[in-house]
Length: 184
Ligand code: ADP
Image (cartoon, rainbow, N blue to C red; front, top):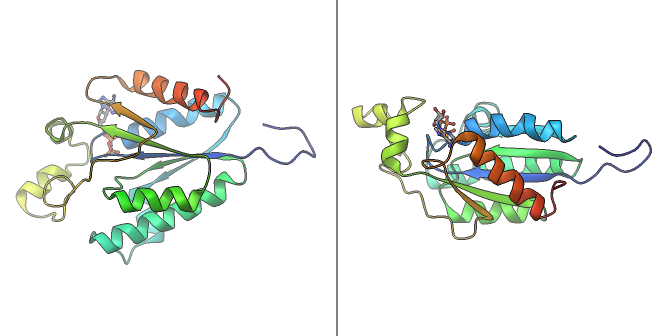
């Protein structure tokens, strides 16, 4: 993107939130090459991966989850202001964290709620985490014994139980284009 000598274009942050199994990892991994093919430099910040590197001391209390989201939003901000399209894949169960991320990133923050009924997420269970929470080896599981607050202000809601991955991505790219973040 851009011409030699010109300042880099401002990037943006797509913040993908939703229950475990709603499709955040799948969609961010598939959206990344799509945006690259449009000329963007892309980074995926996966909440679980970022936890290992950035927040190994944090657990899953509200305070710790909010702190972790704050750290990730700060990295997202730094990348976006240097022209990167940043895809954050993080449960982000609390509205306060979403609002904080929006305010840390500033402008060019695009919040996508991957809404998917918990019964479907439980059937998918890609990481086996619902099973482990039923067995009792995982506690504070979002949607089970920890809340997922319904997003109040998403820029887009995508129901991944009724759309394919490709359809979900098309919808996100279309909305990014009509909001002026990417070329239409
Ligand atoms: P999360 O990162 O939110 O925990 P994952 O992406 O790891 O979720 O898992 C979602 C699972 O649901 C994957 O196995 C994926 O193939 C499946 N899936 C089915 N339909 C969709 C869809 N429309 N969008 C995303 N994932 C989907």
